[in-house]
Length: 338
Ligand SMILES: NC(=O)c1ccc[n+]([C@@H]2O[C@H](COP(=O)([O-])OP(=O)(O)OC[C@H]3O[C@@H](n4cnc5c(N)ncnc54)[C@H](OP(=O)(O)O)[C@@H]3O)[C@@H](O)[C@H]2O)c1
Image: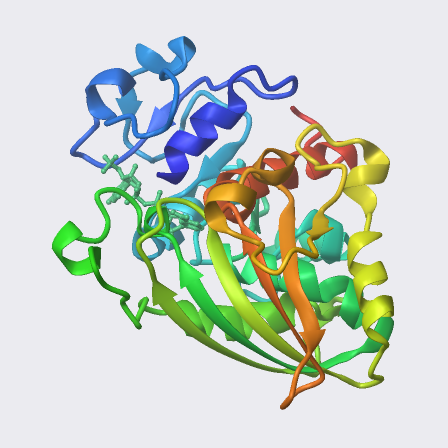
């Protein structure tokens, strides 16, 4: 699912051209068009159809690697590319919590790229690994970032409703999800709880100081194709007025917008006031899938405030996030060879 989004989003990209594709031994040796069951709206881009699917081992004919491998095999594979000198822009969980690996959302923590200096000790060939967060973490952390910077988030509770495409292809069996909600997504709650404090943490000297906040997550798979949603409650160190909260969220802009990065949305966060928004079907494509939508912003009866946040899980939550990371790396001079 994420690989296809990469192919779709990289078609006609002004800075990248797909020169090689790699997947499992189920696909190796076939052309991409024979190996791939195309599941996205529109045609499979012509430029990739005849590319041979190769094993994911270096050398590959490319300047950088976008990876969306299952977490359990990503560690060895991505590590081997970084060891061989390739920049690896990863969407997998394998390296996200490593001390010397940036867990990057360009609008939130571009300062964490200073960790790359430490990776030069691990990968002396010049390769490195930059990761993007889990698909639900990313919308939570992006929504919390301007609030934390301004008012200090001391605790947050998130209850997610996650789309089917988040489980990959073929993913969840139709008999399990039709007429149903599944209250367990393996490893997801732990990822949200740990990744959020790293992303919102501060780069100090040569490491990330985790953000001092309590994060609690409960995750559910729902019968929606694309678009993850979360009901979020937040406590602040200094409780703001509701209107301040709204203003800080809707006026949020950051480095990708200043630099005019190709995939950066004009507004990273849109706040909607209708009582029945956001909805996956109506709001997941905001900002070409790179804008998150916040709604139902109100005071809470237990914590300070609550809201609902929604984002496109395979774009802002996966392939689009990784491509924006690569665009930032180019803009800041970390991908000199590209
Ligand atoms: N889907 C989302 O919304 C989302 C969001 C954020 C992060 N992620 C993460 O992104 C990664 C991919 O997710 P996905 O949804 O795209 O899964 P997917 O649809 O199951 O695709 C997995 C890909 O990895 C390849 N692969 C599997 N085993 C392999 C092996 N042993 N060697 C080489 N390649 C192998 C598969 O190759 P074949 O095509 O040959 O089977 C396929 O191309 C996961 O780590 C996931 O947690 C997903």
